[in-house]
Image (cartoon, rainbow, N blue to C red):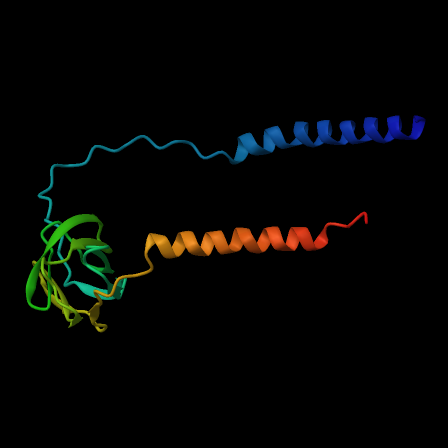
Length: 167
């Protein structure tokens, strides 16, 4: 017990000494906060708009009745950016930053592949991958319920197989 007390006291003394030596060193290395210099009134140039680029469409395969929106990842997206899917205008839903554009697909898109284009004030870009519209329905809710019921049945059977018998 005495050894533990000595170790604890030595550790506390070391931490205290380290703290006392750090305070002057930290105060000496602290940078002074510069005072803001008055800036002369300059004519501000409007930010230049770069031509858009499309890096990725997300998702590439979509069912418009289930998921009517796609996210276009790229560069040069502005609030004035427009998108076209297969030559038809898509509705711009949101431009959160210069790299993302959320668009609602045009109504009544039939099944097939479509070229996606984005246009801003500086030009137009075309996606390298085509957007695939697939109207085939996915699994229904009944299929999910049947799969869940089968898993519950399987768990019960496995549980009964492990139960020891007392016969």
